Length: 82
Image 1 (cartoon, rainbow, N blue to C red):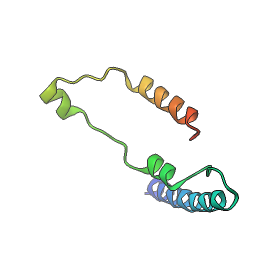
Image 2: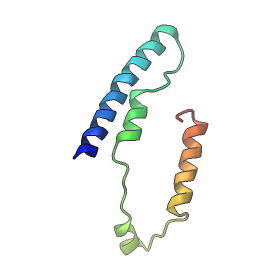
Image 3: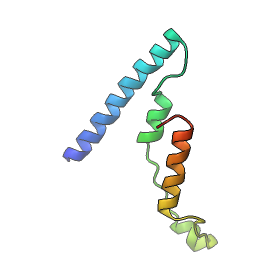
Image 4: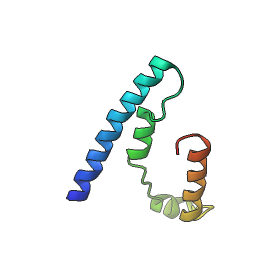
């Protein structure tokens, strides 16, 4: 329960900070360091289950979980999100 409360509090804090960052970016020009879209991307439910694709289509992922996470982290960093 405490973990859930901390997660929600963190998401709310991130929302407030992103609103401030977007406002600041509008006032001074430039790109906000944290935006509402970024918060949604990081806090949204990104879980995907592939059981049905495996059963019905014979799908198998081309890369493993560790490689997929590493590739995603590199993309976020290259795109300025990390």
